[in-house]
Structures are given as structure tokens and as C-alpha cells.
Amino acid sequence: MAKSYNIVVLPGDGIGPEVTGEAVRVLQLAADKCGFELKLSSHDFGGIAIDNHGKPLPDSTIAACEASDAMLLGAVGGPKWGVGKVRPEQGLLALRVHFDLYANVRPALFPSKSLLSLSPLKESVAEGTDLIVVRELVKGLYIGEKTEADLTPGAAGEAADVMRYNRADVERITRLAAFLALQSSPPKKLHSIDKANVLACSRLWRHVVQETVDREFAAQGVEVDHQLVDSAAMVIVSNPRKLNGIVLTENMFGDILSDESSVIPGALGLLPSASLSGLPDGKQKCRGLYEPIHGSAPDIAGQGIANPVGTILSAAMLCRYSLGETRAADAIEAAVRQMLDARADGGDEVRTRDLHGQAGSKDVGDAVCARLEKLL
Ligand code: NAI
Ligand code: MG
Image 1 (cartoon, rainbow, N blue to C red):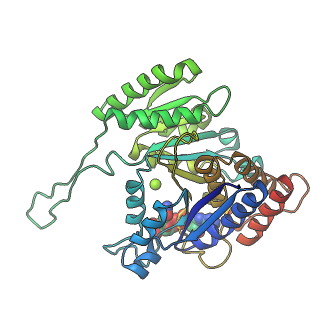
Image 2: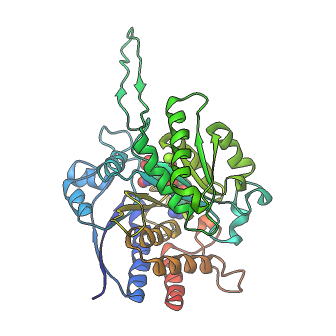
Image 3: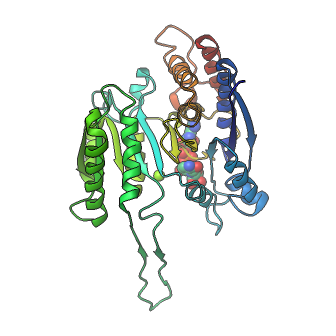
């Protein structure tokens, strides 16, 4: 009997429905060709859920996600909900915590060599950048206890956010980073980023990362170095190849460094991400939330011109990590690469405007599907 997977699609707001629509077409074709079945259902999430249910993560959406193998998200947010007390982004945070999606995996690489000229960095600096930021996502400053400031005149107005990590938190994210490093041969290098000269949490982090690698992964050839976050931030724009491999870091540093590194390839619409609840080793369920790194792009929403590549590549990650369907994942990534490289190969260029082309979202979906047909 064919394997069957339950996939929840959360189109979200703005260009979300446009980009997830194309990714779902690609995913469905990959499933048909590779012989697995998809049970897809769409649910309200983000701003649209606030409009329809009064909150960004309705109970019916949580229930559907609980019954799923993986979730594919477009993007949430927009000016309509930006300043309200109930905001779409709260749904994202709630989803991460509810499903303990502790590992955010964000590659920063050029899906095609022909895109090098889009980088804001000099080509000689950007060329060959190939790193994956692994960010701890459910602990640290963003999640710790908060004291809101009393802003009435005369009050001291003190605010506090608490950063807290323990050994188990650091061990599990280190294991996940090492697992990803071991997907390559020889294994990728781990670069652990902290602020151990100042923060107690970072001294714990540095110790436990090193200890876990030594104990569980050194024999398999995994190596780790440790760098301070401020200097890593400089390296990302001055010599990003130096961080090639897996960049492993805590929640807030990872938020900043993943955004910083994602500008190297020069187009927000290209890059995917995964947020995982476990090791994607096929031995246990690894539920994941997969989404492009861009937002809801209200300025171009509804025009059919959004670049769906980041969402299509997120669907490839979904196949790889949550479904274990490696052949489908490889083929989707290859189809995207072939499409982006088409001009170099003397073929038709299929690129959206953010990549200086004229194609619409649907043209990109069509082009990826046409290549997938041949590859599978
Ligand atoms: P944005 O990523 O939505 O847009 C920034 C610029 O990049 C815009 O000019 C947009 O047109 C362009 N762009 C983004 N994705 C594109 C694509 N796929 N194809 C072509 N062009 C694309 O960031 P912005 O404008 O700061 O935020 C808009 C809304 O999205 C806000 O409400 C923000 O909170 C939300 N947001 C949501 C995220 C999520 O759902 N994970 C992440 C980032 C922002
Ligand atoms: Mg961010």
C-alpha cells in the first residue's frame, strides 16, 4: 500500500496563498511521481484567522496540525493587523511553543550560480556561500519570563526579559545540528556562536555543545569551533565562506544571524526554512513547520507576481525531514535549480520580478512542474 501523509497547509496572509498554491502543486506532482499519497487540508492562520475566529491560531487549526505529519505555511501579517492587541505573529510563536519546534533550520546559499550578481556583497565575497543556520527556537530571551515596564510618568519604568537555558535544551539542538552536519561526507563543520565572555547562558552553551560533540559525534568526524556573536556578525558580511557548514546558535542570536546571512543570496523570495520538533532521522516522528523566510509582502499581494521558490524549496525540506521522501526532495531542488539556470543552458528564463525577470508565480510553478515531470 502506498504511504500516505497528512499535510496541513496554512496559506496565511498577503502573498501566502499565492506562494503556497504553487508549492502545493509541486508537492502533489512529486507525490504522484514518487508513489506516495498526500492528504492536504487548508486552515486559517494569522491575520485571516483573527478576522474569521478572533485569534491567530484557532483551536480548529491546532487540532488539524496535531493530526498532521507536517505543516506548510505561507506568511502571516500585514498593516491591517499590525498594531492591534491580537496580532498574527502571536500565532507563529504559539505554534512553535505548542509543538515544541525547537530547531529552526535556515540555509543561506545560492540555489543557482547564475544568481550571484543579485547579492549585495561583491561576487568574490559572496561566491560559494553555503551555510545553514540552526537556531534554538523555543527557549532563551524571547520565551523567558517578562516584566513589562510601567510607563506612567514618575514610575521607574523598568522592564526585564529573562534568558534561561539548561543542559537538555543545548544537548538536543546540538544533536540536531550534528545530524545535519553528518548528512554530508565529510561532515560539515559546526560553528557554535555565543557570547561566552559576557553571558552565563553562553558559557553553559559553549560547554554543553563541546561536550555533546566530543561524546557523541567526534568519532564520526564532526568538529566544532566557537565564536563570539559580534565577530560572527562581521564575518558573515566580510567572509561568509568562513562560516560554511552549520552555524549553531541560541534563539535571539539566531534570529539576527539568520536574517543577516539570508541577504547574501540577494533575494528574499528564494530561501526556505524548517522548524523541527525532533531529529529527522526517520526513527521517530519529526513534525515540522515549513515556510519561506519572507513575510506576507502586502505591497505585491494579489498580483500573482510573488516568487514562490522559497515556498517550493520549503516543500522540498518538508519531504526530506518530515516525510523521509528523499527522492522527492532531491528532485524538487534539482527542478528549481534547472529552472533558475535555464538561461545559462540556452533555455527560456523563468524568473519573477524580484530576480529581474517577468514571470508570474504560476509560470514558476509550471516551470518547476515541467522539469519535475522529466526528473521523476
Ligand atoms: P516582506 O518579506 O513581506 O517583504 C519585504 C520586501 O520583499 C517587499 O518589498 C516584498 O514585496 C518583497 N518580497 C518578499 N517576499 C517576496 C516574494 N516571495 N517575491 C517577491 N518579492 C517578495 O517583509 P515586510 O514587508 O517587512 O513585512 C510584511 C509583513 O509580513 C509584516 O506584517 C511582517 O510582520 C510579516 N512578516 C511575516 C513573516 C512570517 O510570516 N514568518 C516573516 C517576516 C515578516
Ligand atoms: Mg527574524
